[in-house]
Length: 440
Image 1 (cartoon, rainbow, N blue to C red):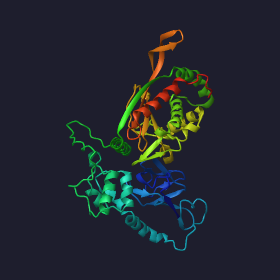
Image 2 (image 1 turned 180 degrees about the vertical axis):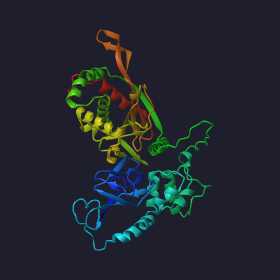
Image 3 (image 1 turned 90 degrees about the vertical axis):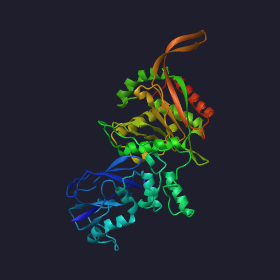
Image 4 (image 1 turned 60 degrees about the horizontal axis):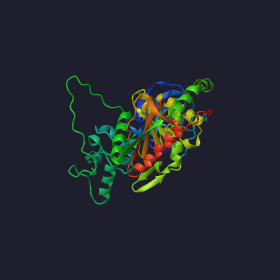
């Protein structure tokens, strides 16, 4: 019987590890080719690893909840065939396993692999023994800097509910370099600007206490971090989108018959936002301390609500280089795959600006939180019919128009009110100046 190695795949350029959330197949179960073996999660997206071969799952090397580096063997599948171990990237290409001269025999691997994994990744595996929550970023930093779990447990976190943040780990490392052995509870690494932790909340009789799922924890930590990092300011403007509404109502049926999909308002607004960003590149930036990173590409993230109630932000890359039809196609594809958990990790990273649509839930407007490390996020309010003053050569008239409110939240460290206002004003001009004869 040949054994086939199942390896933690590369999930994206910046993904170095993933958490095993659930083994779909149990040891001893038969596996068909393309059957889902295990569900994994990163700080970007959840995914599944399918089996590239047919056989029987004979060993799993990690437990649910373990964090595993990319490229690590996580399981073995026994196949009919010649004895040997087949790597995941070669096993399906040949009937005979190529065995290097210095390869450890299968029998020895069975005994040594779990121990080696435990030794080489002790800090990662030990997180399962802690009752304290650590984000994937903190775990990764601990692994890179060889910080043991016992050391992390002694760091006083500056995040909500005393969670350890990136800045806490950096402060700990700085103190070590300066000669400090450990951070004691009496000398927390909490920045002076960070507010005190929330008070302890007790549940009453009849209350239901439910722990957040993994994605909601990540969202919560990311939102708190963003408010701590960026001084948020929000500006508002209203826009008359009557031309856009009338145009969409006129073309949507033919578009649906021709393309087999819907055309919504969101791609139109994303298309306009990309054009405005090209004119105001100072908003398409990130901050690294006192250094401004002007992004070459305009990659717009669109906040998408999931059936679970959580949120994910797939990214339309090079949005300014796409025509309206291209944006419509991309938006529909990403939104549909987001809702069925089929996004790739690379499709939810690299954004330089984000748009969130409050109007989807009939909200007039909102004050969104910046998606770090970006410096601005655009909120789209509901489109409503309102009485409006219409200026004509013959004088002003009152008419019924389709009006929406745009809100721009921005990082006041780099975007001042004037710049934020100019961007919103340009968005208003682009939307109100939409050509009702546009072809798509």
